[in-house]
Length: 356
Ligand SMILES: *Cc1c(COP(=O)(O)O)cnc(C)c1O
Image (cartoon, rainbow, N blue to C red; front, top):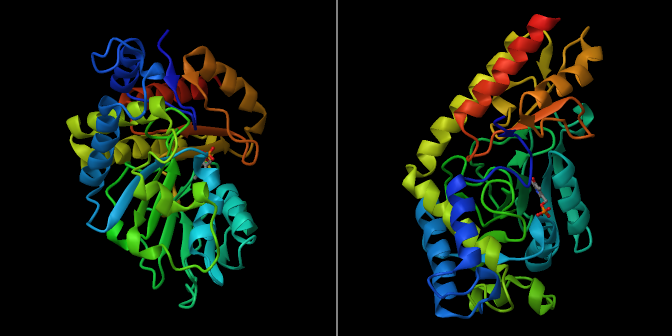
């Protein structure tokens, strides 16, 4: 039976990425050696890093003055690296979910944190709209896509202070205006590569402003100066990321991805809104994530949750169980998930409705 992979992360990757990485695990760049056993300083691997950086810049249209680096430690390490490198006195944060909260917690180790708005009052089922970004903050931090709660900031915010964004789960899903951001970072395992590599896009002029001493490995400048080669970078995930970037380019780039992503999201939310059994957890369509679609059983049908989960699993739907903080279901529709998988899920929802 065909499996449809709706996991939230690590998650579906293009077949192109998986096949080319599998080949390179046997024979990388015609070296006759595995990608796992070559020096990260070999000219063949340096070429991989350089091409990945170049494709980041090309696909996201990154202006001059920015660096692209690949790190270990996951997005979670960025929660501390950002304030370590940028927070002098005060930083502003928007609290839109579990990942925002973790970022806020780390920032508090380094200075004053002004949480300008929060949607915690409604279990993070909306994006706060009315807030003022303090002009004296060193930066303003947002989580553009809230992987757990299924909300997304789908436009590039205007910020009077440097804007920092965790884009772990929506990078490359829609065109963005990078010039509006000072730092964009994310773990690769949602929309780009297997777990193990973290990307950071950094406007060079935001660095070097804090007084404190920063440990070498946690200092962005270290990795920028050494082109992600200060220490051994995650070789295999970086190679896989390059394959996904090539796949994106071959498939028309990010504008094309966005068109398909809109279509997939509209199809699934449309069915959730239509089907009497289900209800989207995010009421305002403008706040609904295109990447992580969260839904629960509608009033009166709560008792059918387990039955639907079993019904869908038996029909090849993988990873649709919701996060424990939200319950119900979550279908992640990352770039690599084909439209046919969404069609298959919608069909299963309709078939289940007919059994009730
Ligand atoms: C998954 C996720 C993280 C955590 O990433 P790690 O690489 O596991 O540290 C952070 N932020 C967002 C938005 C995520 O989806």
